Length: 256
Ligand code: F6R
Image (tube, rainbow, N blue to C red; front, side):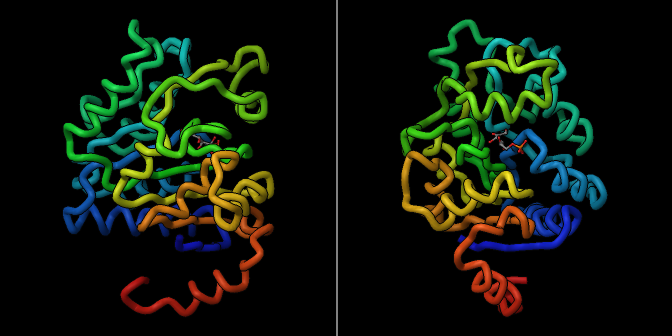
């Protein structure tokens, strides 16, 4: 894992955008995995600011969707991705995919989505946030570390965290469909972005804790190309924080 600690949302967004735009420019990044929620917004902002026509050619796959919210609901991830990604980055709507939380055959929807990802050759770079429970995607604690896209039940903690987007806690869906941890691990590169003290425990457990389904984000310790992008608050509980800062400040030119 490469742990990068930066001072501002703008720097974090630009750092991730550098990686994405380099991949797009070199032709190695054609399929982008996108996340919803607050964490990735600086990345989308930076991509908007530094937009090139090649960005519009990206195929995109979302991590997850609530079950039972109509697409027209402003907090459905179909609607969020349409606003934050498809429209703002000028992608073709037919190239942006979100699991269908309203599918008539929900049991099969995960397999259908996996097949859709496979049909374009897999995800080149997956953007991730992390929940206070340690979830990535909506893979809550005790998720199988090799899971594939499927229906999950959200924890009360996640529903409380996401209640800020809804009129009340009761309005937050209880179920979701999410890429599995195995699906996320298949992405050729991952960039996880986390801000704020409320993420500090989850980040410390994911980066330095034992590999455990109790912190699903810890599976990224097994990924060969994972960048963990943090602000100082999200990094504040890392035991090796000085080491990560030193390694980053002294990184070789080819890694800049
Ligand atoms: C979003 C997702 C979640 C969020 C996580 C953090 O598609 O899969 O894992 O990334 O819940 O959410 P925010 O960024 O709102 O703190």
